[in-house]
Image (cartoon, rainbow, N blue to C red):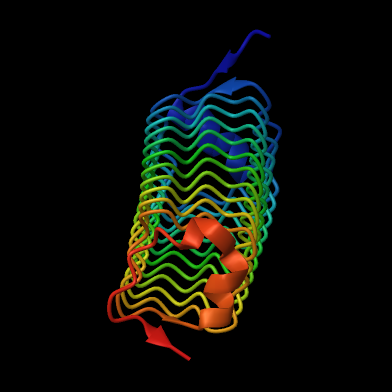
Length: 260
């Protein structure tokens, strides 16, 4: 599909006139800071290196859009559609993405610190090495997502769906995962020190070599979980929970764990 190339001047004139059908437009490096693009159609548009900080894209359609390296600090993407969007290295610090659809989106190395992702749809999303420090992912759908090596320190993942999610070597220290669904998730080598996993479902999860020092696992479900070489020092969990984890828990390192 041929892309439409627009100058910044032409683009701002279109926005002012309320013409927001920009499907397939070439907006590479466009200066759109604080622009009102709420409800705009930006399907498959090129926004590479665009400046969109403070802009409103509430309810916009960015499915299949290319926003690699775009600067989108504090942008409002509430309820926006970013299905299969390419956002490698994009800067979304402090952005509002509540209820946004990011299924199968590519966000490798993206900067998402302190973003609001409550109830966002991230099924199958690729977030390897992304920085989600302090992000709010309460109730987010992350089934099958890849978060290998991602930074989620202090993030809120309460009630999030992380079923079959890849979280190998992910940084989750101090994260809140109360009531999270982690069935079958791969947490090999993950840093979960001081995390709150109260009531989380870790049935069949792989926690080989994971560091759960000081983690709160009260009422967490560990049936069939693989805890081989996991560090459980000062973790809060019961003997019954370890028993449900089965033979794989026998090799866990549990000196000084708090047994309820």
